Image 1 (tube, rainbow, N blue to C red):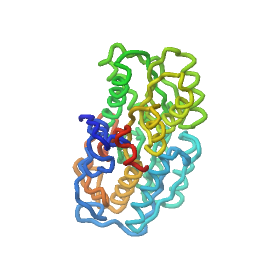
Image 2 (spheres, rainbow, N blue to C red):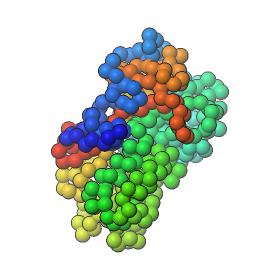
Image 3 (spheres, rainbow, N blue to C red):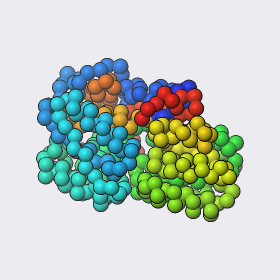
Image 4 (cartoon, rainbow, N blue to C red):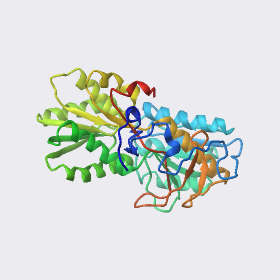
Length: 362
């Protein structure tokens, strides 16, 4: 995957980043061109030749209910189920912990939901509850942040972009800004977040290409603005020679950008994953040069259609199985790889900078 930062696609999609950051080529909206096999076909059928059942109830369980990124993703799911004659129930806690999500899984079981779409705050702690839901006949999907429950329950992961590309691209973006030299740090979300840890793993691998760049530490803001700001201040105090920060979380990068924009004496390059709507001012005032992302609403929309297809029995988790995701087109289930089971990839992220940030409204 090549992370081609095209003029405007790169802006928010991390989105257009390149096959998941590597492709960065297509507009963040091009979910239909995803590595998961999307095509230009459109329609409301959830699988080859099959239509979704009416009246489906899908529980969307985000990391928390206050994160703007998660809110956009949930709205995408709601749009999908509305098109299909069903409904989405959004339920979660206000903190990024598995304990805050478990009551929502139980609520879905009690409501006899048709499917659960969950962004995991912990890869394993949710498994017993989700296994109980699966035994009750509820289809299980994860999105944004995967679960790792082995084969019990079997689930489909709706991945925003190629995991490796997301991690390596962020390192490459920062390397260009700091001439591949100096101390850097990572400002992450929750320490147990599956997606964050996967991306960070690939960042560390990519750093081997830049021997003069040194990762001094990783800190965790738990996707909370106040916590993110506090750990950022601690980071700057502990490492006065810090040259760059990667924050692969929309809350972390926006919190860091806000601080750096009002402390011009602190010369630290910042990149990561952010919402264009939150980052626009910081790109225009020069605080941030480039960052990436995909369209969260399209991720939720894709997850909604996938959930409906599985719940309707018109799609399966078998490698190569296909279904149609409304206006995004057709998608194909990818083979399990490593710790990731059956999955579907939304598409290449976008890299944002001054040249294209105004083209993205999310």
